[in-house]
Image 1 (cartoon, rainbow, N blue to C red):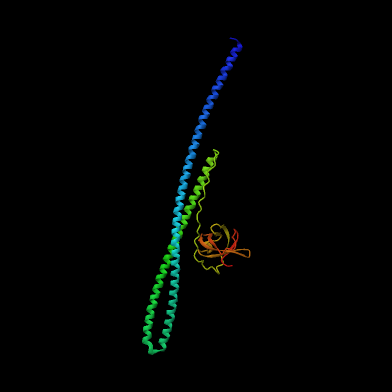
Image 2 (cartoon, rainbow, N blue to C red):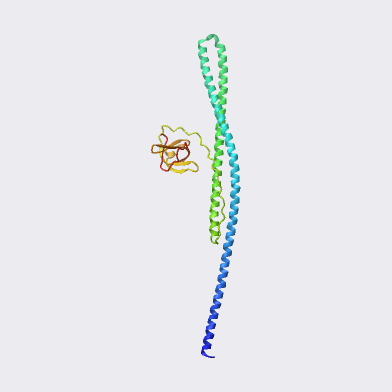
Length: 291
């Protein structure tokens, strides 16, 4: 065998070795990529299943929230009507008490000046006193019923606030899961499905009548504004004398902006609902109990 033939045989052997190594490397890489693809695809399927389950849970929670909110709103409306009726009855009883008291005073004066009608006046006086005691007993009963109705009304409002918080938490969890699904699908060149956001109805409960705050002279500034829910936060709290149901006037320079009726009070801040809004308040606007 010639030298050239030996060289060719050696080169051919080396080429065959390199070719075999390349084939082995390719097969190993193909198996590895296939395993990664299967793993990613399984992860995507599981995430999509969790997203569908979260959507079903959210829809069920929203339906339950809407049902409870409608029921509580009906109860609150009925309680408010009952409250107004109790208030009207109390006013009427107060008027009757005033009339009977005036009548008693008049009868007492007549009794002192007219001795001949003393017996008759005594009977009238006794009857009037009995009627007065009856009216006062009815007034005490109405006072008790009014307090019980007010407590029930506040309890219903608290339940609505809890339901709104739960609904907002579910919406936030779904948004986070949608974001993760979108990231996984983007890795494969797919577009994540667009889901319509759940809109929570923000039916604002009207606050109680504002506490009279004239001559208190509290002053502060607006520190945060939630225009969507008509809420604002001020820089002073219970440590400064702020109490629930107080009314603060918001001004910008010499202009009146709106009123804030306080709903919740912390030591160094308070939150209230906007009222008599002429323009939207801003952070830094002045607030005070006196204009």
